[in-house]
Image 1 (cartoon, helix red, strand yellow):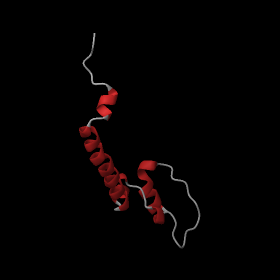
Image 2 (cartoon, rainbow, N blue to C red):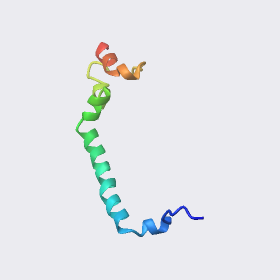
Image 3 (cartoon, rainbow, N blue to C red):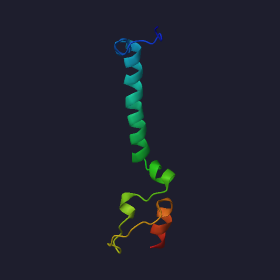
Image 4 (tube, rainbow, N blue to C red):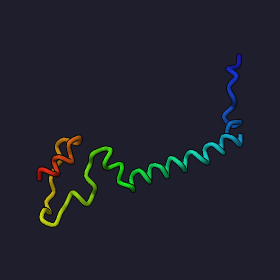
Length: 77
């Protein structure tokens, strides 16, 4: 009794499989890189950028207690 599924090796040899994956995997990588490099990821998730943790007048390390309100904790200090 067969389930009528294609063998995995047959799928890997199919040109459509490689065409689809040759386009989608690099596009997902580029979309993620642009999302982070543009700074939109910091705004969406509400976390401070790496250069906002330390300023010239404050050089100590502090601990963020609530990860969802990290931006407001930084503004309080």
